[in-house]
Amino acid sequence: MATGRTHRPATRSRGIPEATVARLPLYLRALTALSERSVPTVSSEELAAAAGVNSAKLRKDFSYLGSYGTRGVGYDVEYLVYQISRELGLTQDWPVVIVGIGNLGAALANYGGFASRGFRVAALIDADPGMAGKPVAGIPVQHTDELEKIIQDDGVSIGVIATPAGAAQQVCDRLVAAGVTSILNFAPTVLNVPEGVDVRKVDLSIELQILAFHEQRKAGEEAAADAVAPPAVARKQPHVGPSADSTGSADKGPDGDVPAVMPA
Amino acid sequence: MATGRTHRPATRSRGIPEATVARLPLYLRALTALSERSVPTVSSEELAAAAGVNSAKLRKDFSYLGSYGTRGVGYDVEYLVYQISRELGLTQDWPVVIVGIGNLGAALANYGGFASRGFRVAALIDADPGMAGKPVAGIPVQHTDELEKIIQDDGVSIGVIATPAGAAQQVCDRLVAAGVTSILNFAPTVLNVPEGVDVRKVDLSIELQILAFHEQRKAGEEAAADAVAPPAVARKQPHVGPSADSTGSADKGPDGDVPAVMPA
DNA sequence: CCATCTTTGTGCACGCGTTCACAAAGACAT
DNA sequence: ATGTCTTTGTGAACGCGTGCACAAAGATGG
Image 1 (tube, each protein chain N blue to C red):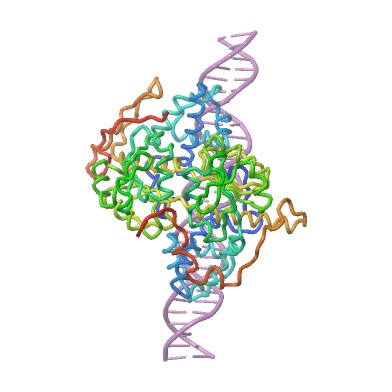
Image 2 (image 1 turned 90 degrees about the vertical axis):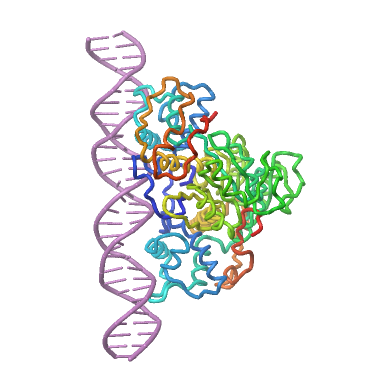
């Protein structure tokens, strides 16, 4: 799903399948909402509905954490919030650096979800000297030269890359060399990292392409079954030659995928 | 993965497993790069390395598309680019609407990856009347009232939600009612959609929490003897970072004396 | 204290995805 | 043509994740 490397020595140590870990934040969000409404307990059925998953799956997920429920009653909301937070490591403070303060980087810096869950923006870093000192989301942007110093001084172990694709690997290397061991990559590139470093990637382009695939499939099925066109009329524009159009050569940027503004 | 609805017999119709579909954009990106360098053919081993996957997996993935390789030689780059593009539906033009033009929405509008692969920003939509007419990425923002009209006029079938969480479900309902059948959701909420609508979500907060989990596990690999006594009063500030100092192998680590921050 | 009812926790089976390993297919040299 | 060498395409085994179905556990009421 998301680790850039195919490797997964990951969750070998103590139970908790990767798929379960990926769902814990979902449960936590639903539980936090319940907590704010002062709901004392919740059944697996209710919570599963709120999180958008199967109730059996939810119970099995929780069983990896331990037996935190009460049969006949359900789960204590507050207690479960604490247990999941602890399991996810959110009871600690995680300083995070964001590299590449373009449109996307600025959006991330302003994203409220950071501060609300144990994550703290330790620094914003950009390669453009003109950005230095300029405040974004109340935090002054610092130049790339400061990167290593910041990471070491603040003990940063999580880095967010929001640079253009061309700069991503280089930034990644510097982050890792300075001590970062977890990277969230928004640049459309496959990052190469040494053993022991986790990479998760968020790729808008890929998500859209997956949607397009399903969309095309849906359109094709309808066409095969019936001729009744639902709402739209001009939805298709088959305007591509056998192999000359989109593939030719540099008809757009390096890959056309540039998430942020950052001079190389 | 990402389909909002629990049920998803998914790609039953025409082979092609979901996991393979999710990798096709990755291959396509690597192939495009090769194409720009005028590389005529590529072996499964080389291409797999470029895409960051196993070569056997790549070959099996391609086998679902058909036999496009030549034994003893490899794959024709141009031909494969075309085949994958066609399979993903990228030879069509996909108009996309972005709803919620805040920091993130603006970043998405400026994202080059849209236009480069058959996706076209048909409209930017925001609920704030003050935003109306204001150009973002060269496109004037339109008010939410126009949403249905735009979707129907342009035959939009893909919508991107970049609104706050509170507005996401409402926006989603309107998109679906107007004819959108694929949604990319950036809001931290579980969207409820009817059968036949695909939802993929991109959630920064969840990604970070998953990274935090692994980070914590790495930090406390040897000091696994915590076995925290269940706190009777939940949501209390627990003692924090008790593991960063005991191990000698861990060179990094947030010098464990940061204050605990519980989610609110 | 016993009966009943609710809800958890989990054993089990099934299907998907990954990986191995190798035969088949073609290129290429002689 | 024939042999050798490279690389694909895939059969088969394995492991993980999912969901069913049910027994165990505890609450609740009489």
